Length: 456
Image (tube, rainbow, N blue to C red; front, side, top):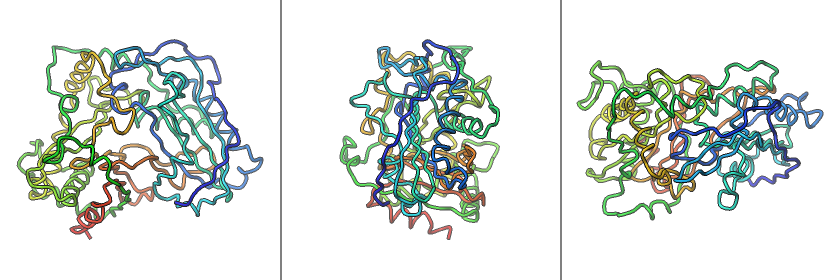
């Protein structure tokens, strides 16, 4: 990506257009663990010419519609605050969110907008200084509109993961876009956190929760992951055509391998197949010994797994990070279906009982600090010998139209940690998939070779 010179022209604090509820809003334990910082995404657009005059048309539309969206989604206009023991509370005080307007002399075609880049975070997505600004002064949403010389624009978004998960964030973005188009709200957010704060429990629950109590595996012979964290990484976007996806599904479903938890013999899903393929290829590329323990991190949405199910519009964190575990030798020597079976077994542990048990486990923790990631070096390391595969195939990530048409590209912001990967649909809608993967530079070429060698 070329160097982008960006000049900031304006900064707005956008508050709800009408009075909203004031006061504290409790956060669930799921809100307060894992990533509690802001998560970046970016969208690029080529608006029609009539949107470019007067020059503030797009900025005004974004600001006015954002103000309206913050009425039903008023928690986003508040601030977090620490209440002791590593716990947070949301203060609904209508202090508002930040909207920056910037310009650049660059053209979209010059910056390589069609793939993730570390430059996006540096220039096109608002930055946050967690070190010097107290959390109670940080907006929960920051937006940067950047206008390019060619007439194209980017919309950089950074939203607090302590308040929303991916499903909730996309719900807000889509409703904001509806209001910008002049349409009524499509679905109100479900703001009652009591269903997660105090779920009905029929009997005492005592389940093991390795995702909280046990660290992820280390490379054999090492006592920590300090050196692995320091190694240079690189990012790849690997496309799987519809035909290649079908080949992988056929390979993984040829026979139900021993160890599958699915007594009914259900075919493995695309996610289970593709994540299993990524896992096996990573073990091969990293040249793991057969006895090397390895974990694959899975993000499981619990909304439909609780009884009664949470509303789809539940506005908060409802996802659990679950590890699938194995040994590299088993993954590499057994068929693809074995890796998929390990992933399915992990996912199917997330039942109503499991979710409520996890909530009880965390409620009984005297301090949540050790479960929180504020800086990358504090997060559980899902790099070598582990990795995380996040499923974006179930999220409505495309088609965010504020009135000037759908985006020409959307993607994550920062994506530079070894082992981080996403699986998402191609925007072409042709049945193909895209794997966005970050690995150590020393491993990426071998990974790509193994990734395609059996499916070309």
